[in-house]
Length: 115
Length: 115
Image (cartoon, rainbow over all chains, first blue to last red; front, side, top):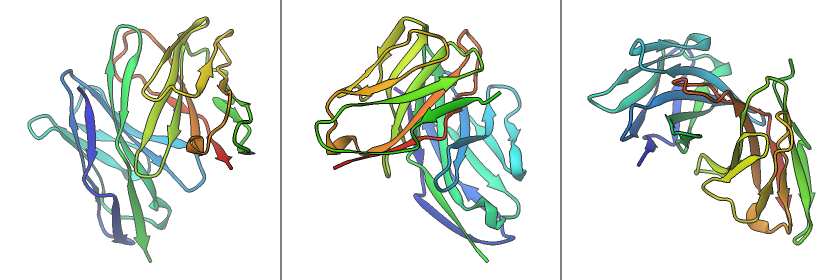
């Protein structure tokens, strides 16, 4: 069975300081991993994805994530937080089946950025 | 290219009323799905479709019906709304086929309040 754990329901950082949003997954298969961001009253936007190529994945807006198979982790980082980064972030696992993809969303981490 | 569109953006229903949430995509994607988003629970899959005329249940299908008569449209029907169906509903689409890490594209969401 697949599952996704986001270790922090809420993270607060000061503007200009690093961001770390943690994600651990469980999967019997080789998963694809995604991070999505949702700003207030907006839809979901893809930040980045891992698909068994390079383990360090760079996304939009300066975010990146590193896939660590031994730790079953896919943590999201950004060197310097900006006020516009305040949003909800979802870690997602996707496993291809024969006719559909099993997509599991984590519960989300709310990021606050303090001026 | 509008991507994935959803209507309405917001709807208030009384218990027992019926309604249809519309979803359309112009990317010629075969795979479409409906999710509901509830606080602290991430997104949960309601129904999905791998092509016109083919639909199947997801994680939380009870109280919802779907049909897929065209590639572009995938409406979600609530036959008799209940307060437990108060949620934000997201439609998504992607290509099918065996491609690792195919990205899902999400609509802007429909906020539904059932009184």
